[in-house]
Length: 229
Length: 219
Image (cartoon, rainbow over all chains, first blue to last red; front, side, top):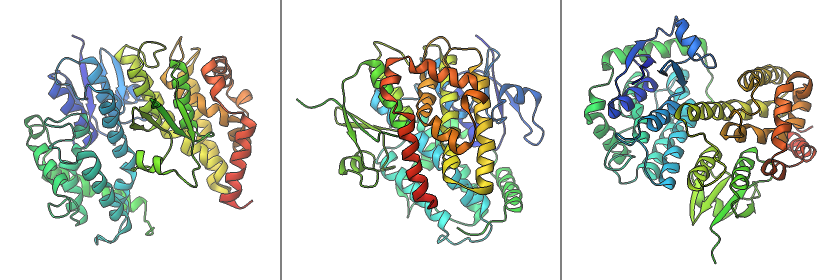
């Protein structure tokens, strides 16, 4: 079998999406940790358009953008652990929800990393994040255990950041959005997702993650002293 | 008899056009419903409650939203002819990557060309030309983004060609002079019936954009 390499970054949820997918499929790979402050020639060569991780390299050919990579993994190793539903309409729905999360990425990023004041939930950005979570809970998850049904699938992997990394973001900002009182089903999903053995065994150290998140926010707010919208 | 395939759309939407081209490529009969975006139908709000946007494809009563997701759905369900995505996983990944690049970059920056002024407009012009350069680099000497045949990434980008005249005018550049490969590629795509029959006239689009610009900038 051709060699599989993953260029990743230890605190990145996008990097972890690929790790989780490869592990669920039982695909052996070599992991290369990138120093994002000093990107390798290999990364710049393999992802000239965005210069970002994760990049999957299979048989010397690179694939960039985590959602594209997830679909590539699904197409290339179709016989073990399907990540997408068989039914075409359900597949379209899965893609829709993954894209929904991608599209809201900036709102979430700015609310947590760019706005430099306010810990209060009345903050406009936080309100938007809460709205987003409510839509996810009501329309995407509903009463299912996982977005993928009884087992985790590509949508769960795509929202994996919400199950673990989000807690660090909340702690960093001193807010509590994903609570059993406010979002009971989504909160339960987050707990269940983290317990899946492939996920549990492949998460960054929480304390280290928190330190990292804080330093990212410091850097971002120093560069972007924002006025409230 | 119930109509099996319905498309909720807006004539000038490059996203809606993608779906129309895919349906035409596959020879699918469907009912087209024009939406008034300032007075959206109950059906649209019901079928796309999350975004309330067109295009929405309704197949046997079930909605599919987001243009590229719809195009993939069409490709998967009507898989007997005109494949839009290649069968090779690596080529599929490349097609998805570029379609995603087009989605992320072309619309938002293009929009700034006609909806902003001053410094923001200058920055948008620069950014847009960079985007076109990147796309031209990817196209290279290939007849289509998909290689020898018209495919997913071509569908994703070709619909913007109906907006070229508007983008050129507000962006103050000439596609033919400055990005000849893209210009030639767009002409090549227009030789396909599905594209030629779908894309609205560039002048009509320009007038529509002019109207939107007036409303936004008051000039």
